[in-house]
Structures are given as C-alpha cells and as structure tokens.
Length: 100
Length: 182
Image 1 (cartoon, rainbow over the protein chains, first blue to last red):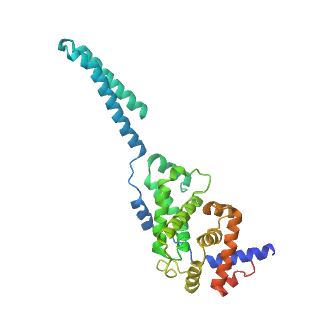
Image 2: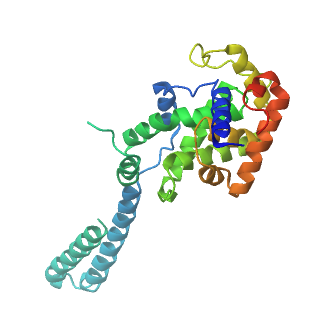
Image 3: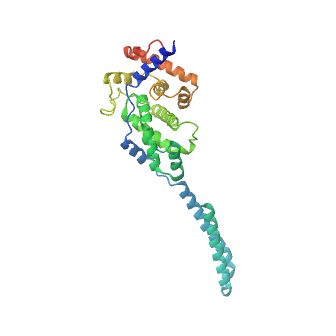
C-alpha cells in the first residue's frame, strides 16, 4: 500500500471514528469533580500537628524532671522553676521551628 | 497572557493543595477523558461521566506519583482505561443502547452514523475500542497508546487491526468507506 493510500485510509477512519466529537469542557463537570475530591487535610498541617504534640510532650517531661526534686523542698523552688520553664520553652521552640 | 502549563499546575496542587489549579487541569483534560470513556461505555453518557469523575479523583490522589515522564493526558487516559476495566468488571455492566449524547452538542453531521458507530463500538473489546479511539480521535502515537493500555506496541497494532475488522463487520458500508483493505 502506498503512503498516500495509507494516509487516505487513516483520514477516512478518523472521519468515521470522529463522528462522535469530544464533549466540550463543562464547568459543571469540573465542579462535580472538585466536590468529590477527598477532604484531606494538607500534609504540612498534619505534620505540624504531630510535631506540636511531640513538643508538648517533651516540654512536659522536661518540666516534670526539673521540678519534681525541688517540690519536696518548696524554699528552693524558684530557680529550678525558671530553669525548667526556660528549658521547656526552648525545647518547644526548637522542635517546632525545625519541623516547620 | 498564556495559560499555565500542566507541570506548573501540578506543582501548585502538590505544594499548596491548590484546588483551583486542579480545576484548571480538569477543565483542560476533561474533553479527552470523557470522550474516551463515552466511547468505551458505548455512548452511555451518564456512566462515562461517573467513570470520568472517578478518574480525576484517582488522579488527584495519585498526583504525587506522576513523574512527568509521560504527558499528563496520557497518564489520565491510562487511569481512565483502568477505571473502566475495574468498573466494567465489577458491575459486568453493558450499555443497553447506543448513546444519546448530551443534547445537541454530540450530534454533529450525521446522527445516524453516530448511533451506528456507538452501537458498533460496543461489539469491540475494551482494548480495541480504546486503541482505535486513542489512535484516530485523540491522535496518540502507538507508543503512547501502549503506555495507556499497559501493553507492547505490537499488541496495540493488533488491537487496532482487529478493532477495524470488527467495525467493518458491524458497520458494513460505513466502514467500507474507511478503507476495507487495510
């Protein structure tokens, strides 16, 4: 078969199969798809929540470890309290900043 | 102002979960996806649009896996074909009739031809219908069709040849005009 015959036949098949044209873009269909998309939370938000929980956990542990011994002796509480809170805040800030 | 490319829209979706960008992608590619599925569904517009919706939802979920090695359109065609195979196999559903199309828009020059064509396409195997449609309507290369169907290029050629043969048998005179010898 010559190239021109092949091209003619290809055109004929295109004409036949193209008898049903492609549907035009339809905003209603697009809206329907958007409505059906999963309502998933953004990945970054999920990670941030997990890191926040981790930071709170670390801060709590640090505070507890620092404060528990002086609690037995209330007169010596002020300095460890400040130190404990500072360490907890630092841990919280570090973990949260690094994760962001 | 030129339209943003597919790749930049994909980046927006992946980085910012920008659904507006995804809407642009849907708007851009829905004619091809819905057209292919209508053909595979034998002109059953409602069923085809259900499958097209599922196609885009799967694409959204799996967009991170799209590497850009293929064109987005080819990738979407592949998902659409797989969605069709999944749903057709699950429901064992066959179209009851040739398609009506959406009012007015689908009927172009010859509604009789269109009806006969849709009906004849239902006699084809899905791979044959997909290969013919992708080749002659969407003008994809054999390599791209092989990627969509997940088969070797030689098999694509076989699907096209057999699809033509079946269409000739189904459509008689119509397909005879399209070159009965090839």
